[in-house]
Image (cartoon, rainbow, N blue to C red; front, top):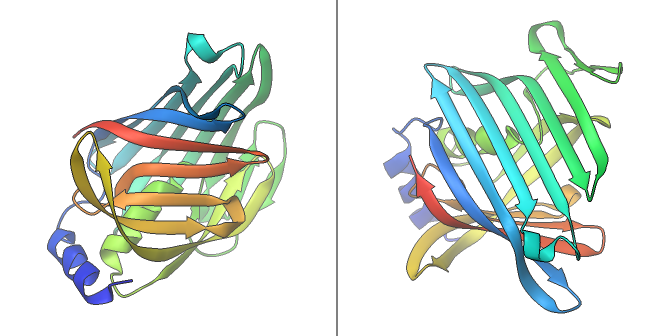
Length: 229
């Protein structure tokens, strides 16, 4: 990584609030036997009211591709930003393939009592430190990059239907991405455990402009096409 130049960029934006409302619209691509195809759309929507946030995602395949891959996923994460940290208190997800519900659960998080409980009845103990969900981890990562410009790795307790696990996000390199004819300077971040690569925009408080995820034998990519804040 070009450490000096990117630290300078972080310093420029470090006075901005990481949790500022925005809506990001994305195109969803998948690697298939017919090549890399645009199969749908996704939206990330962050609402902020003082210190409270509601972060949602909606992803679905377009009608043209439903015969090939009929997929939809909705997520919701809520919590507060306290002293520059994202404090999660709720997460839910509904995921469908064709007409079959693959995932449908809620998790309530009580950080002060060190536990998280799922709508399935399972309860997990939380170790001291930050706990986030698979969606709010993007907000925590954005905050931490801004607040800790000399740090190259960030580790979080992440809770989902399978329990609580530690995930490491490593700052990899700078990368310029061209979207709709516009060059965007990004920071490339890798989570090897999730087979996930993020490109975070330096201009927009390190929110994701490109998300690449490997799910089994299929690779998915979300590319930002419209951003408003």
